[in-house]
Figure (spheres, rainbow, N blue to C red):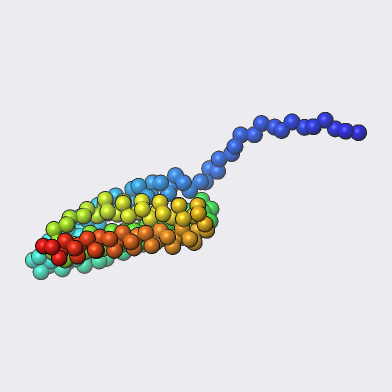
Length: 173
C-alpha cells in the first residue's frame, strides 16, 4: 500500500516580529547624533568656563557624560535582551566605546592647541559606523567574538590615527 505523496502546504516565510535589526539601525544612526550634540554643547560650555577659571560646567560634563553613555548603554542592552539577541552586551559596548573615543578625539586637538575642529556628533557617528561595520564583517567571517575584538580594534585604530594627525599638525605648526 502506497500513499500518494503529499504536496507541501504553501507557507510564507515568517518574519521574527522581535528582530533586533530595526532598533540596532536606529541606535547606530541616532545615538551618536543626539547624544553627541548634547555632550558637545556641554563640553563647549565647560571649555569656555575653563577660560575664566569656572569649573562648574566642567564638573557638569564629567557627571553628565558617563551618566548619558552608561544609561544609553544599559537601555540598548535591555532592548536587545528583550528581543532575544544572542550576545546583547556586544553591540552596546561597541557604541559606548565609540562615544567615549569620540569625546577623546574631539577634545584632544583642543588641549594640544591645534586648530582642528572635530564636531562630536559627526565624529561619534563615523566611529560608531566604522565599529559596527567591522563588527558585522568580523561576525560574518568567524565568530561573534572575533567581530567584537576587530570592532574594538578598529575604533582604537581611528583614535590613534586622529592622535597621529594631531601630533603631525602640531609638529608643523
